[in-house]
Image 1 (cartoon, helix red, strand yellow):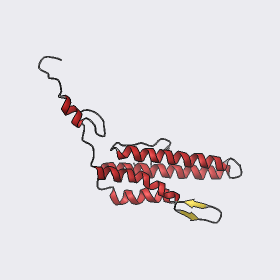
Image 2: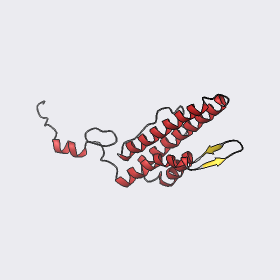
Image 3: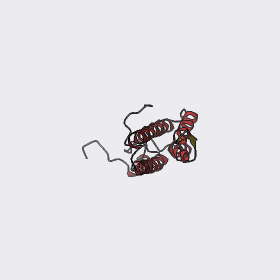
Image 4: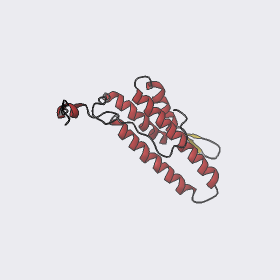
Length: 152
């Protein structure tokens, strides 16, 4: 230690060392209700498995978008964590919709379509659950595979 400087108190570091940045002295964890709403922004996309709209030849999923949009619109002004989680969830679900539409358009006549859609849905489920769990700890989550963020 240099002259005139004292070592930081370990109890102080341990008490306030975990926040969104994860470093010493960062903000304390957000309250549990805010973390719950932020994680629900992600988990609400899973309810999309239940809400589909029939079209002429296909059933179109909309719930994976509708859930995060409704949660985000109703709760985004309560905390930055909820706003960020909602925008991230919506951007990811929009990207998954674009990937799904591209798969159907490009591979509609190929027997591999069902396997490709299954892989896409599996990736969506795994990443959505991971995002919800990470956000429930009060940490921000950034989805991979998002090629363009509509909501910034």
